[in-house]
Amino acid sequence: MGEFLTNVTIRKVYPGKTGESEYGPWQVWNFYLEGHEKLKLNYFSGEEKPIPVEGAALKLIEYDIVTKGGYTNNNVKQFVLAVAKEKSDSPPGDYEPPGDPLPEMKHNGKIDAPKPSPKPTIDSSITMYISYSKDIAVALIETGHWVINENTVFRDIAEHVVTVGLEMYQKVNNG
Image (cartoon, rainbow, N blue to C red):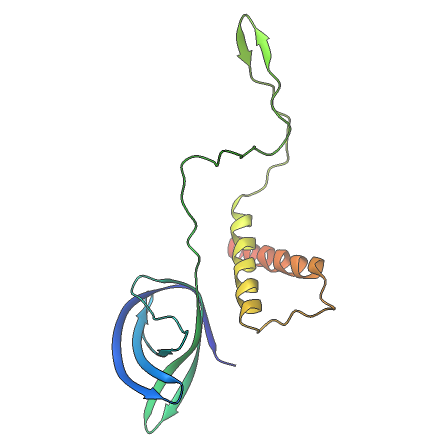
């Protein structure tokens, strides 16, 4: 099993050697990641493999550290591109906010807002940690490092993701 990094961005890409094998043409790419300035990664593209691009956001990157002839290379086995979410200032036309529709209460020709019901408060940053845990779980499932089979129960996966997310939140916020 190789080394992993999650949620990183490609900072600089340099083309390396090219060649051709029985599987067709190939290209070596050398690149660096933001926040990992001394980590030079090597990647072979060809066939259907994507080409690394400066500024690309990666959800996951897996690489092997190989020492040969006095040189150490960090050979990328695979990377998973992060999917960019479309940013929109307005909700889609068929969007309905969650909860019951607001009743219209007229008073002197004006609509009064209903009184809000008290709800328990929760630190909204908890959801960030649970979402991060979910992103890692998805990346591990997609790369085959967390095997899902016919005996896997969705509730177990969800419980694991939430538990890990809450543990991360507690560790960061409670020392």
